[in-house]
Length: 282
Image 1 (tube, rainbow, N blue to C red):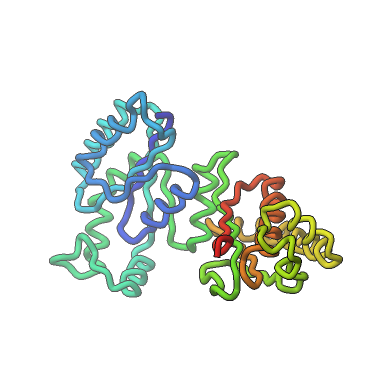
Image 2: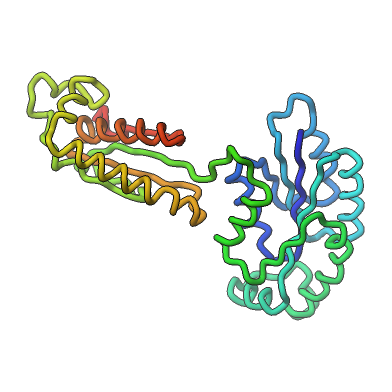
């Protein structure tokens, strides 16, 4: 294994969000690991046949500083490229976050909330001192935190945002989870061409029929320009998933052909979109 990352810090400082951002960058993340298990898990992950080049652990917070420091020391002796991230946050902001979520604080069984935060801060100060990176999340929203994670732990070939394309038939219902839905019923329906009726949008004859329509080319051109504009904006805004859906009456001809043309365009941009023709066999 080339890289191992341990994410620790104050409860409520954004550990879970940090872990999600790492996963979106391709890291293999194990969340809420007890400190005493980190070294054993790292041994398994570091075996010669491991498929993971980047692995991260987030620490569970029933572990006090002695156990955590010992676990980090053991791990450093085995992993030369170990890095530790400590997420810090002001007491005032942590109080607000816990009051908003109404979740119990792990140090708060016999203390008030503010005293629990202070006690945890004191207990984890030695861990903070050992960290390679200390990130204060007091003034960071989720998008700003994501950008920081990408800047520190992303690689040049990482593409956090995944794209999916779905073709469907309106008579079977539109997909509910699409970021954008396009209605292709403005195009003439190949269903009414007897020779094309048994075919689908995956067949060249149907594709050629759709492409020769006078409105198809300007539609695709404007759609491509819109995608050129929006995809980088969505990616920069922290979206990890973007889904396009193209519908026609039955989901067999026009929507399939257009979805395939859009897929080819996105491949040319460097994306590897997942494509599903939901109703092609209906």
